[in-house]
Image 1 (cartoon, rainbow, N blue to C red):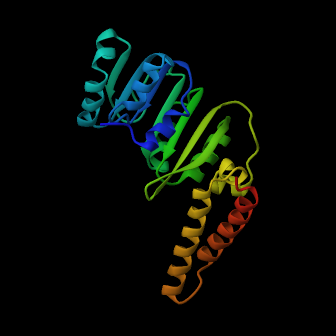
Image 2 (image 1 turned 180 degrees about the vertical axis):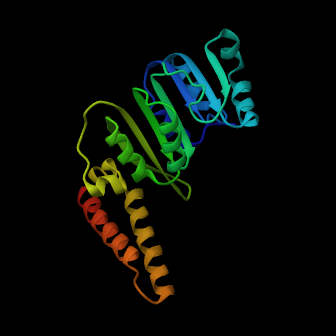
Image 3 (image 1 turned 120 degrees about the vertical axis):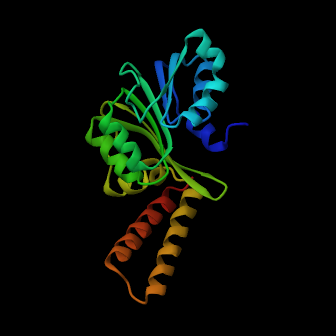
Amino acid sequence: MKRTGRLDAVCAELSACGLFADVGCDHGYCTLYMLERGLCRGAVISDISAKSLQKAERLLRGYIAEGRVRSVCCAGLAEVPREAELVLIAGMGGEEILQILREGFLPPKLVLQPMKNAPKLRAFLLENGYAIAHDYTYFEGRKYYDILRAERGTGRAYSGPDLLFGYDNLKSPSAAFVRRLEREAEECRARVAAAGKLFPAAETRLRQLAEASDEAQRNLR
């Protein structure tokens, strides 16, 4: 089985480190990417599901035999060494990622790919001393995926719209992101029409979408 385009996009955000940790590793492709390119000296793969973890263990069995990869079946970061310099958490809900970080530890570098609730993750990272270096939407098939790369330090300031939609999405948007805004606005208007009235939450969201679309259109590359 080959990596998907989404995983390739995630891998493109990974950088050199000493110890790499892939939380919720599934098949283990991102860890293999790091090892094959010499981007880490060692890695820890973890998953709450022993069955899922076995898939990654099969893929990485040579590195496990060499002692370069350690496999742990656990929830979140529970058994991941705090020495991990770069932690990847991909393919989970934003709330679940937040719980993992709050109950675990905050490493020097993070790459996150939430399936939803990205605004909450952005706020958490900024509130906890991270600079968000890259924050954009990746489109594949019919789905949109938010990808965030962050590291400890002071970085660019985020406005309210940046928190809601992603800094890079608004400052250097792709055509796919603009389509995402337009599609959500259409869906929101359809729900309002079906209800026969405009709810305050829908009115607020439509205004946010319109303002984000205007900014994205001005900066569209």
